[in-house]
Image 1 (cartoon, helix red, strand yellow):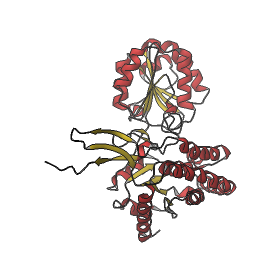
Image 2 (cartoon, rainbow, N blue to C red):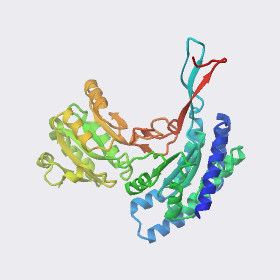
Image 3 (cartoon, one colour):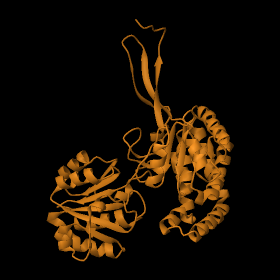
Length: 417
């Protein structure tokens, strides 16, 4: 796609965003419903096209993890449809009065939620991001420009075109949803220069992609680099619950950003829990790497190095460290963590409160799996990522996080004195 075409696309999105900002909740929800219906009508084409792209990726020697992220089967397709319908049921994030007051002189002042405008989503591998991104953006009244990975280009185009058709049927602007239809970095580089028309960029993918986007543009970027997630088993952790939470946090899906990467275990329960954990993790084919103290209890596991505490494995590997109480656990997390998702297993309300107050992460969980830190399980309908930034959004990025606000003032001829 030539630079002039990217410019046209960006201008079209800006115009569409201006129209979207005044659409009603019912019209946007109708659009989401029509988008789901239109997507269902091309299911077979999507599955067949995706199968061809998966085969090509496998022939090109792509990793099993990438293949898994790339694949759309019946279950994934149903999930994609369900996310569109779920986000339609979410409360309207627009036109909410966030705060307000009336001055003694009668001047009425309030601020209300409004869309961000045009959002560019640049992502790798996962075609389901195409539906998640479009759904969340339409719900929040934003125009969206999609740029998926070349390995899923045709799948993404099919999905996007179906959703565009549905949105237009509901009366939304033709360019509310757009997708870049050519592979290669040239179009992305042009997109990064469109700060006059694009309000926010959201990269989804590996650390290298996110860093390249963030460093190559003047457009604000909502991002996360790493998901180095921890679970701390306090000395009073219930053994059965602790083991279940570790297994789910680590093994439910090892290649995602909220999977457990480092397990911290209190020295007062390590002797009891570590052998049980080793057996449970071994049955799930997880490689263990431990600190010196851990190796005294589990002598046949690998040695954890300094690099391990900094690692987001996205693989069946777990590092383990024995700590001397909650303060050491919190200090380790705040030093080595990425601010993504961290949890504690404890029966003590005091320890739970100390942990959630002192751990500096976007999501802090008490007696719950790290895998829950996302949009669906938080009741947000659908999200397009998890931000480790502190401005503008932090944690799951759903419809509310894709809004800003404006000040509105009603007077009756009021003048500045």
